[in-house]
Structures are given as structure tokens and as C-alpha cells.
Image 1 (cartoon, one colour):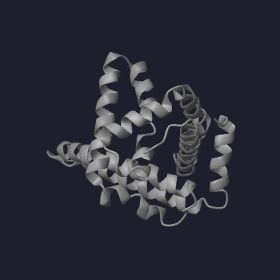
Image 2: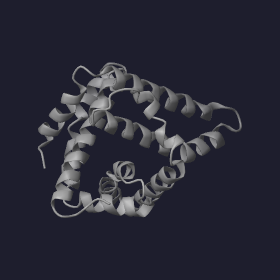
Image 3: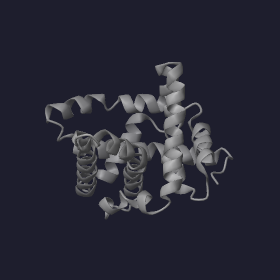
Length: 209
């Protein structure tokens, strides 16, 4: 497995000279989330509308952003905005069911205590990527494969995620504008983590079906 700095370098290699598409896709993503979240303010029915959106839209839309950045990392650097909506247009039920299961499993582990919930969220971190690469795989199969792939690598991913805290604090100083660049940086690094981990996983005689 590559070091954290090497994973970040791989992400920056893809982003160098190609920031426009990821930044614009992130802007669209954030604006849509913000507009829909604002529906809570609608009198009487706002909370109900938001609940429906949170259950039926946000999980798949979030997966779309992850997948868009994965395809970007792999070299397809055009039309990222349209790729945000791919899971909503294709295999919506499969993505929704899986993301809701991940949310339920994580919540149940969090009931035991916060730390088990964090550990399980790290175990499930590869699920969206696995769904993308294995269209024939069902919900629990993808989750279980993610758990296998993350066995022994949860701490690595946790430290990787923590390494962005400094940039996140700087983003606050820019009134949030800096997050338009930070989010693509994080997600391309996550894509690099997945690609390297997947290759190692397969190399150890375990085939991703």
C-alpha cells in the first residue's frame, strides 16, 4: 500500500491542469444540496419534504459525486456534472438500497458507542466504488466485499482522512469557497486509495467479481 503522501501525489497528478471540471461539478453538487436542504423552511410540510429527499435522493446523489470523481481519477475528465446524476438515472434502486443499508448498519453500530460506528463506517468506505465496478453485485455482497478489502486498512484510511483537517480549517477562512477545491482533492485521493487497495486485494489471489 502506498503512503498517504504518495496517494495524495497520485490525486494531484490527475488534478494538475484539470481543476475546472471537478470544481464546477463540486459547485453544482453543493448548490443542489443547499437548495434542497433549504426546503426545510417551507411552512408546515418543509420537514416532511426534506425527510423524503434525505432518504430517497441524497444517498444516491452522494454516490454520484464519488463515482464522478472516480471516473475523473481514471482519466475520463469530461462532463463530470452529468456524471453526478448517473446513479440516479442508472440502477437507482440498487444504489439507494445499498446506501440505506450502509446508513442503517452504521447507525446501529453507533448506538453501541461512537467509536464502533466510526470503525464500521471505515469498513464500508469502499462500497460505492465496488458497486460501480461490479454491476452484477447486490447490496450486501458489495458491503461485505468492502469489509474484506478494508480489513487491516481502516486505520490507514482514518489517518488519510484526518490529513485533510488543516486544509478544511483553511477552507473556513475562505468562507467555504476553498472547499470547491478541497472536496475534489479529497475524493480523488479516496479514488487513489481504492484503486491501490483493489489492486493489492486482487494481487493477493482474491478476485473482485
